[in-house]
Image (cartoon, rainbow, N blue to C red; front, side, top):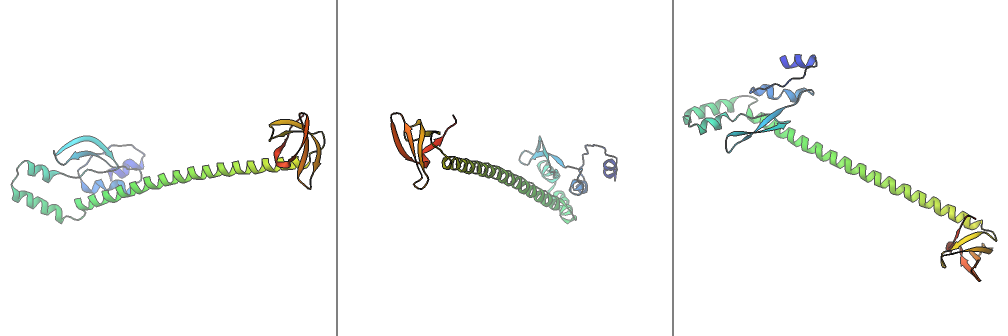
Amino acid sequence: AILDQLDAVGCRAVVTTHLGDLKTYAFHNPHAENGAVEFDAETLRPTYRLLIGQFGMSNAIQIARRLNLPPELLDRAQSYLDGREGGASDLARLQEIRADAERAKAEALAARHAAEREKAEFQEKSAALVRAVEAETELREKRVTLRPNDLVRVARFDKTGRVVRVDPKKQTVQVSVGLGQWEVPFDEVFPEEE
């Protein structure tokens, strides 16, 4: 009830608890987040590393066993925990489910970013292809409209010359380059500006 009231007034709070029921509060409230200090099960000591999105599990029985409390006392305590509804095993299962969901979310985000990158690359390649087609169409139109005395670069010679005659049927152009005149296919001439 206190946490609900703090949430209702928009208060930020850090709350610590060992109560199992409160550990699940963040699962039902989107404004709450669990956190736990990591615990080394071997040494039975905290590592002091904060784990956001997880809640701590009680290690009281393991610690009591390490302190050599009587086995019958430990067995009875364990039976109380095992018989409780919504006990530690349920909390552990909830934590596993949440961790699985977080992993799935991370994988989905990674896949989304990869898809967005692929989409951007595809759009870039598509735009480049459209530009190339437009440039080729423009070049073809310029070649078709060539007239005598137009300036062209002849790819075969890598030199500039002047159009002498155009033969649209044969798709050739007679070009004066240097001291000679040459008949070359349309696709070997590139119109140039005067």
